[in-house]
Length: 493
Image 1 (cartoon, rainbow, N blue to C red):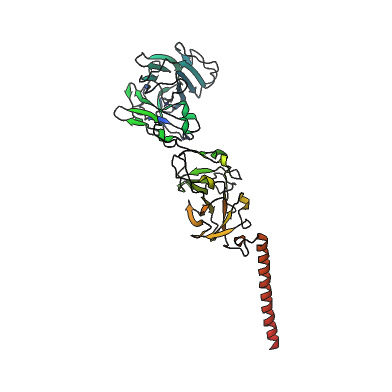
Image 2: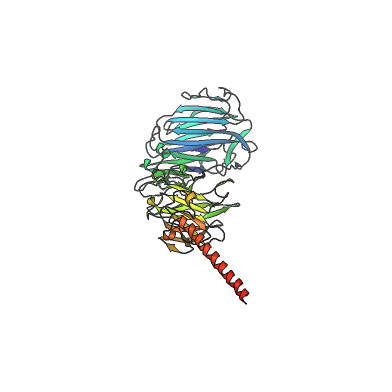
């Protein structure tokens, strides 16, 4: 998405009109090729986005986007902007004016429409939309979209220049009263992005070949300073070869798949929830950082093409009354996954994960077969004073992870049994049992490390209960016998 932020003819001062905005990120994109323009002096009256494609500009696929915001003569936001979306040869100009009401009227709210510019009658209240079909966009031919605030007082003139052709006025838009300069938001006056239709797919394998667009931002005809670096949080970030030449002030927005393995993702994560309905998230490490009074996991997993990629699944609730305490990350399970050739599809393998803070337990089912080792690591919060962790092999439900499960056995810190090893770790400020080498299992924090007659020896739980009764009876008899001996011994004296 290409964003220009602008205002009107008269300069307020020799400085940028700036504001800040707390907004969301670009999460969920396959590939984001973009550049940002820094602060624009309030004396600047024309901002031009110049882009030059290095390959055929494909109809219905290749696209460039931008939004232009305006400031008042006191440098506050005019609550208005113009956005441009060019897809192939289809150019859409959208004007937003937050204080406008009723329909946009030709000759009053907009004028100077060149032949071919269409304003649908649906435009009303705060939004006006206009469409136009450009000429062909040739490889290596510079294309310019401009917003000029100085030519017609009170209006923003929209211009298009293609290649060596003349600059053409497409339309003029009535600006809010006292609009006078370009607005800089969060140190950025424009955000430019180039994309292809394949960037909106679900997997990186749909993106093939390569493509690039050279971008400059001209301020009253002089190139402005840009920032352009690969966006690291895109799913297919390893295809991003974006760069910036500070000498020519040109950003090269480029993607290239040649000789590169596609990144793969954890598929089905959105539908993976605990029995209590908590969302399960995934990270690449158990590192946690403090933000305010809360800890959060610091290394989110986006995608990978590695054959031995560690991943950890966890729950973190941001509301009270959930299955885990508010603002405390609870790791559930971790393992090493091969992402070299395919996605990790949890739904296809009927994987389930669960955690209970109240019972200090955790569960992972059908996950072991997806790891490179055939095993995984489970985590259960340590109850204060507990010196053992109970292991329930084959458990399929969090409610079955307790001292009544079949084949129950216990581990203490540093102990290995049945191929599983227990240790204690801290995530944030919470201590967790970490039990590695498991397959289809649940674990829980335990006060005891053994149950007389327990399933560890193959005995059923009922016999364990009978063992408790029997031992209790023997103890009672022994105490009673000792009491009688003492009592009658005193009598004989």
